[in-house]
Length: 376
Image (cartoon, rainbow, N blue to C red):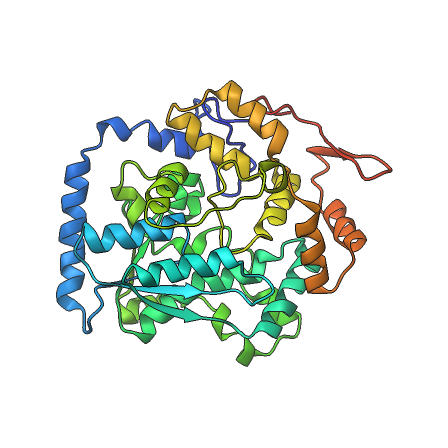
């Protein structure tokens, strides 16, 4: 394990390849920001969206996937008020046991801001069973839910005959998942190759015995379906020079976004602005840390380091202190939801621990083998 020489991105992030100089893809991309003509990019986006607007067969010019959070709120407002487009907002919601009141309020806020919003909800029993299966097999309850979250938008684009899908950040350039890179910096049609959607796709679900008829919400449309419907995903983040976790949060809070009020010790959420529609992502980020050596705080500080708002040394302190943060109440509620004990939860987590990166003693205490910022 080694770290980017500029930020705290480790080379254990799936799909990441450092440059010969030891720079991660996200920092390498950011280094070119000062040379970018943002006005030219804006004009490119205007021309691009105009073509789709001319061919649109209904009242909506584009479709945007939303949770009601910071990124989707900023995107929706910017697309409508800056680009002059009429977007259909598509939200795949969680079952009652998982969705937060904060998340419901934030979707309501988007509706109150004047947007058309389509809300879909997969069958809750199948959702719950798939979450349990994903956790017991892979110690990753998100493995199925992320399939549904990513699939909902292109599925609805096909249903509503809206060829233009506007997405947020480019995972290849802004996070470092190089498998998602397309023909241009804004081409998102290779999003299907990201780590979240990869790893065997739905094979494990079929192997587990789930019926095909119950899995429609989890199927990402095929390349042939994209071609037949002339679908195009465009990364909005490529056109916005100030796209970041914190900036998007500030823009959206000013427009009514409600943020998380729990402590960073319980959530690993430094500013309380990520994944606001549910709280179990907190334990998934902790598990990611134990598998790959980085969690939610690493993602936060990497952006802040690139933007010059904190030093690498200050980032190291934050990562050391909070990257594995997760309140016990979140673990208890999740374990209860999928029908296991807290002890079974930790047995699974310990069984998935990356033994190259961590040690575990007889009492279950986990300690790092690596030094944050240096590696192994």
